[in-house]
Amino acid sequence: MKIAVDVMGGDFAPKAVIEGILLALPSLSNNEIILAVGPRDTIQSILDEHHYSGTQIQIIHADQVIEMGEHPTRALSQKPNSSIGIGFGLLKEGKADVFASAGNTGAMMVGSLFSVKTIEGIQRPAIAGFVPQTDGKYAVMLDIGANADCKPEMLEQFAILGSVYFEATTGIKSPRVGLINIGEEEQKGSILAQATHALLKANSKINFIGNIEGKDFFKGKADVIVTDGFTGNIMLKMGESIYNIMKDQGMTNDFVENTNYEKYGGSPIIGINGNVIIAHGASSPVAIKNMIGLCKSVVESKVCEKIKGIIENK
Amino acid sequence: MKIAVDVMGGDFAPKAVIEGILLALPSLSNNEIILAVGPRDTIQSILDEHHYSGTQIQIIHADQVIEMGEHPTRALSQKPNSSIGIGFGLLKEGKADVFASAGNTGAMMVGSLFSVKTIEGIQRPAIAGFVPQTDGKYAVMLDIGANADCKPEMLEQFAILGSVYFEATTGIKSPRVGLINIGEEEQKGSILAQATHALLKANSKINFIGNIEGKDFFKGKADVIVTDGFTGNIMLKMGESIYNIMKDQGMTNDFVENTNYEKYGGSPIIGINGNVIIAHGASSPVAIKNMIGLCKSVVESKVCEKIKGIIENK
Image 1 (cartoon, each protein chain N blue to C red):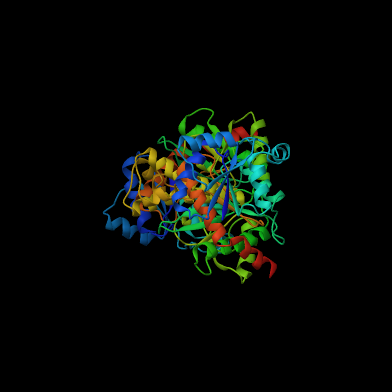
Image 2 (cartoon, rainbow over the protein chains, first blue to last red; image 1 turned 90 degrees about the vertical axis):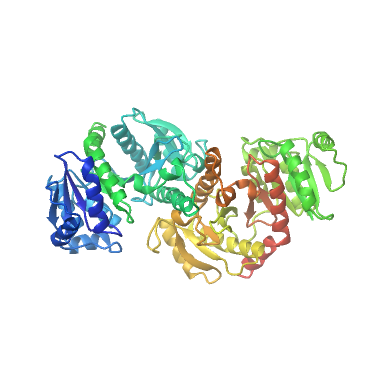
């Protein structure tokens, strides 16, 4: 397995990224190779500082960087030798099994659409986020920000994408799908939520358990949480803020620890012809280590192939 | 001041409501009268149990009850002698300065629109919720559920309504208005959020500080948080769930305590020609006591009159 990592992505890159890769190495088997994408000399000097001289980290030279604030499409076309541009090249050519970055989220999304492209039959790929549950497990929520405005049919596909992802990565059959809404009854909520409820209820491919409210978000009611990218982004970030608030106040326990985004390592883009992970901009070395674990999980579970199978057999 | 309270509203009515009224009595001055709306005999017997024989609680007989699950409009027209129907009658006729209930939220909303009616010039009234902040203060968020689908112009009015409410009840001038969105930059977010951002930025009547994200929700960035009723309802309920989760896990501190909805007593409906408070369905006696405190606050601060002044002088 070849895991391409954008060494220049994130607020603390390249140092935090390379240190995260080094942290991940002991958990990798010999045939799991990290392709560290970024400026050769910079990467080499940080590896030297850490006295690394192995062969499991291979440097793929990229001498440009897409900054966090840059316009995604423009940056990708103007910087073909950026670490993100080169990373997507590796993925498209099959030289990497997965590409991950803590850099410009928009560029990662646009890069996915332009290189490996959306799976045929999928209206819009989604970004999936992990939501800690009070029972110690987690739910997968999608979309968490790629699609701020959604149609009911998009949310219906997100339910299928999330179900395949959850089953493939956890082994739990027929995961419970919940729709975020402002009441339990099916006639409650926005026009979008009402129309989506009807579609999910009628869809025999998923195990739809009905609406779930804000108060149920952490309560272990659903394995797959379906919502538009606006609502999902706000809920996910609000959930993550619990960790910082409690830490600042000197309080912690298992649940609070599980609201720390570092634990999950990032968010897969689902619905494209390849494995792409977007990590948190503020990723620490521990977050990067877990990002690499997430990369392994999506490759090993063959999520992408399974989604293609389901969508094509529609 | 006459405060009409629906004794039959809420999961634990009438007992919890009457006990809440009794808890509130010591904080009321002699000329602050509670109009307890509900079945005379039932109310009297609970007051007798508590050995109450004063005159500050006056029973207003109502022999019908609108249940939690009933269709609001139908229930109000079929049950004119319900406690909610009678309560709105008192409000409309000026026999009460404020009406509060922990009962059917939809019926409280519809009752407001049919009896005291929307202030001329207001597109849609909003329900305001209180959001605890990590600095110990609170922000006012609207809408929290009356309007699941909103237009930019509605959100612009919510910003004005919230600003007037916040200033009138706290005395803090030019409260900071934040728009819930999925990024800080003005071009980020849903079509609704982008269009609303432009309107808020151009509106000289409010102190618009820009977008605030899910991660900022509790962080003291804004005094007035503007969003549609779908997003607001989900955020508020998610915030309230922190209290139950932490309590279940035996953890608490000032911030966690402030996520307990009981503290705030309810949510005012803003933008109507009268003072109406909707309390949480699960209201305990303490919550009802605080609901009565909130009733006093909205009457004393003359929010309703101030909003009319602002809107009519547009």
